[in-house]
Image (cartoon, rainbow over all chains, first blue to last red; front, side, top):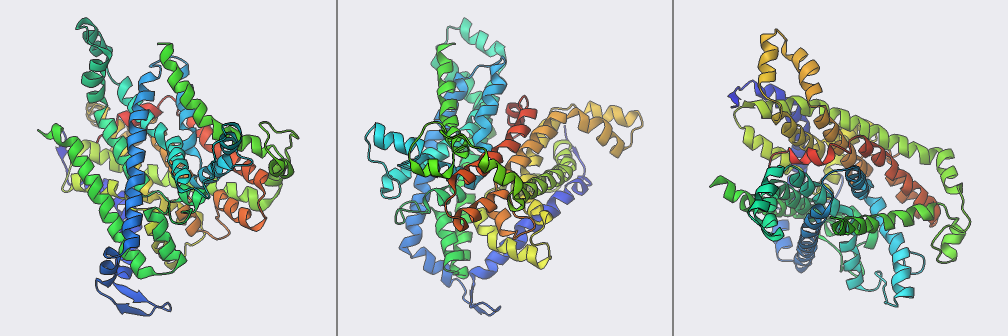
Length: 287
Length: 265
């Protein structure tokens, strides 16, 4: 049992100070911008909630938001089952386990703009391995700078390449923590592979899968660098996700007020959806 | 059993293909790259790597990146250790709320924070220093470290603490000489994740630096636009960014899977 000790606050104080410094001060700056109009030179005009109103009635915002949900939705639908399937197929012990894990973790260790640049090079129609293969060997007309669907397939494939391993690592960690006795009992009962998965493996993986889904949701919902480097939001605006749209406003057009208002709405949506996921997935545990 | 192993093999091949293409391209001359498609480097050259290792703007990029990443890892782990201990051993006012609030900091899009971070660190006159980037990355690395370490500490029986007190250990001495060694694996895993997330993040690192602390990945973007499209050189620089992570993961390979399994939800 944990003992009640208010002095434990001293132990968390350094963490609190450092994270608050990085989280609260910038957040206050954003709030500050979101209710004012600025013309540079530190001239500010009070705007109240005008930016929020303007943003929430704007088609451009909803389109970017829609693309963002589509991206994140597709990512979760593909990566979570794929990650579980790969983790199930991996050997549980032996010399190949660390080899597999190290190789699988490689994509996650590459700086995000290098990931974008790498996939750009990989998919160039004339000199990229994938682009050349699709166009000249399979005869599929593939050019993601022209075709929005090709661009979407490319950013989805890139993200699957980049992050499925995280789901694999987590699911695998959940799997190896299942004691052998469970499998032996299932064998005696003559359980099918499916029931072993449904009633032993899946429930045991649930905590780590909750983490996987939450992490994948947050990170894919906030994704910026990789798709920006790969497609720049194009062709047209077809791959302009929410964060790309946000940076366009803030740095491209220097509309700090609307961009700040958008940041806050963005953050609120992320927080809300994460909380919903979290509550839904841990609901059974509480009962 | 044998039939199943085809799935991980195909998956790993899929992961390695784009990496292979990057590495292959780094050994090609720019002429060969632009001249047409070739599966293997025809005129194998180390020229691209030579440029990187001899030009200070290139290799200083690596030194900068490694410096702030290391600094961030040290800061994150140092402050996360006592905090994780508090979360794992004690109950205190607002502990659950605090824990959840820490985790929400991963949800803030870096794109949101880029400009305010620039203003904040400029105001404290830390712009373009290793410390600025290292501190900024604490935003997402400290919560993650606390979370991982707390999981590992939960696995250490409380009797260890009590025995040490009975034996007359002071708290700092117990913490440094008995407790931390007993969760070595956890420290390794947490350090790995700090290193990884700080190494791959670019948006904040780029915003907070100009010359003196500019990360390698930002130098690549700049070179890409200023020196024409020198693909071979970029590919070589990209290949070199994979190496530090690969070295670090090699050391913690046996603990990686465990690191997450022990974290609490």
